[in-house]
Image 1: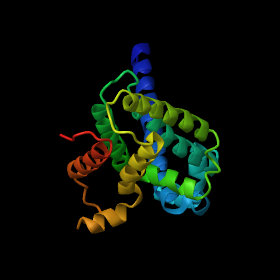
Image 2: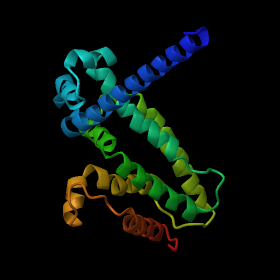
Image 3: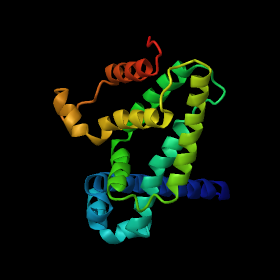
Image 4: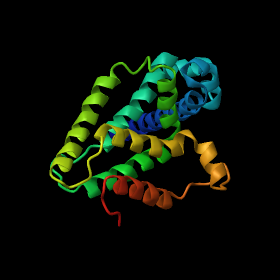
Length: 218
């Protein structure tokens, strides 16, 4: 085997090893989301996470240092996802466009990541002891959105509302479809694993929000 062939073979082995590691880490993440979303931090065990991921407990701990580290990584992944996806355009003078987009993105994120959404909700219901670093960031982000809504109100672009309450109502309505997924499927007459048609939900929620703000929906 030539030197170049040896290098190519070595690179292929490293690539396969990396792919194998990423596949295992992905399985661990999905297993952890399932366990934490169902049982919360206290109720989930590394043994159950390992079994769901198809690993032994010692194998699991080769990839993670602790349950606490894994839980915090998942919890903050949803917070970072929200922060990145739900930014208002502070230069926009079109509240209808911004709010409509916000509702859709919030609903899409909830339905695309139901387990992560439930992990956050369970954490909050348990007192939010792991969210100390998150609250100042969330308050600042929410206040920036509220300031923009207040500007729109002052400019006569929409009805006067309490902007913080408006935002929290949007959070509650959109996250409902993830946090209460079992109830949603039953009420809509869907099988447990049947996908939810998002478009009617988006239309209803968007119309509800826009009409509440004195804006005409499409």
